[in-house]
Image 1 (cartoon, rainbow, N blue to C red):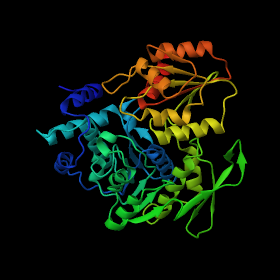
Image 2: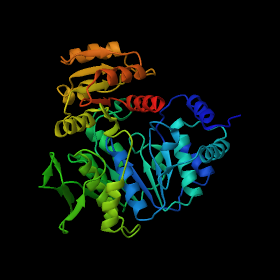
Image 3: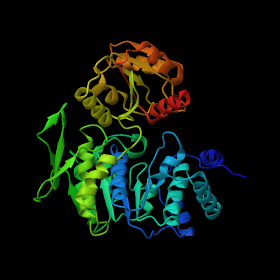
Image 4: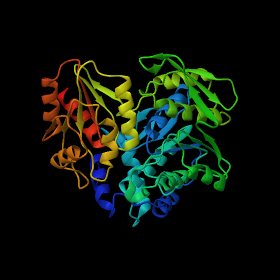
Length: 428
């Protein structure tokens, strides 16, 4: 008998033969039994390799600023599973999630579901329970066959497209673009915030009959005022309309302006369904937050956490470190899973760190720190490399040895950032 959320999650991890099983037949049948296949509120679906979590955070903040009750579903979580399902900006309670799991388990009967599929159905169950004004779903993997694609998006957003999860999506951006484009629907708008979009996005939009708005073609942003190499403000422009002056989003990094401009485009294109004023857009951007994205976790020395784990996100992190250098040394706290493009991750950051500190990750996909050290040397890293046995002792060592002007950057995997966050919380 499963009573606690932890017991439910442990059981779910063992239920299905594989942790990832793309396809909509099984989860769709369970959703049908729960009468969840059609939701009464408008659905926004967000896909992309990088930036989708930031886009969801900005959309959520803008719509809550405009007094709408939002429901958001994201993954993975960094500290608590409850982060995945938020109602009105607050994580769902253990009791609510367990209630949803009980209903899903009863409805599925003998149908096997993955851990992610359980969570996706639980999010829809709770969005219905609390009658949210808008449901915002973040795609977990790909788009076309992801469980969140059960629901027809009234409007969709595709952020950046990069090569990742090659075992499931392939190693070709054009093909990956087709998978992401699977969230489009005939006659409905789709916003693409990738500054170098694949041809397949436009081709699929034309084939499906979706109304595509593309960054650099239909909307853009610009700024001529700079402070510390970052724009003091930015101008958003949709087609030939007058530019809209907006404050910087709270989320750090120049790349976030691509995400922010896509989010603003979505909000503008959805005004007939969810009306939002320019002032609410501005205040929503300024109050948006998402954990693990260029997030400052500590001072003296600064501890910066970023979930960069593929070439595109690593390049964005490298740009940020160049634009906002530390006064002292910059130290990498790093690990990466074996199925990630290590050369693509390390390349943009090769000259950004004074030393590299490697930590172990758990699971069959993990590289050992010893393997990682040799990999870094093979990739041309000449800075000192140190191997550690665990995150807790590594953080203590770094905090004791570093100057207050130094900066530690934890990156390479969601598991690295999650581990650092857990360690710092325990220390407090």
